[in-house]
Length: 104
Length: 182
Ligand SMILES: [Zn+2]
Figure 1 (cartoon, rainbow over the protein chains, first blue to last red):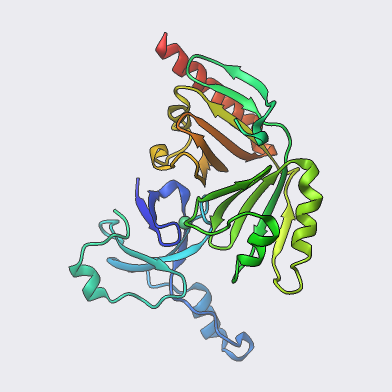
Figure 2: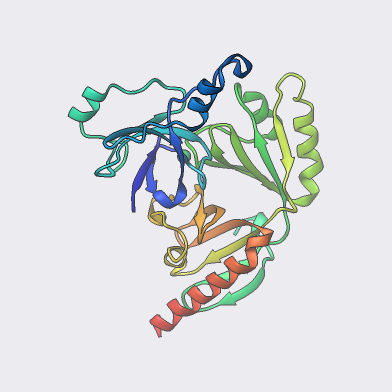
């Protein structure tokens, strides 16, 4: 089982308390009626589906209830870090060179 | 045992653990942001601290579930006073206070192997929940609030519709643990 660090609870807890919530840092267009169908479809449906380092959202469903972001390697399933929703993407170089507290 | 769990109904007792159903109580879900001091003053309770922190005064008891969310318990006769105290704050400090008294029940789990019994449904490390604190967590797929009153004494708040399943599971577990002992 994955152990995931919740940045709000500040505890590393079993995956069973969490729900996966898709790719992170996808901003809803500020004015949907002004974007083209193609742009809207891009926002709704197109995801990067990376093999490797992935920025993704999780929700601490059976806990504090908060959404937060994580950086996970989709090949090894290792979490590099987790951080609060709204915070900028963490710098990858620092993450890769400093082993994480963000999960195991 | 404190006032909130006085006179619970016994469900099952084995040499491993005792399972009881707590008496009905007033339950409120409080959501508030910003300055907590006015709420602390109105309720007479401290609301700060890391998630899982509890506070109590008299019959009132609270646990912090999220940065802006608390569960508040008290005796049914205190409900109107709580609603009044928060309503007086509403204009200056908008918040949400929702009565969830009828939504859930509290199961008391205590005895020498109470903590071990919880591991049949809860994936958390129970030992990391300090006596006097609590957590919202999961038990066999169901969201519950776990209050650890002492090393071997817990309360579990669970929604009504899940309670029969959850209580049955705890009964089976308590019997199995007792059978091991014997
Ligand atoms: Zn959390």
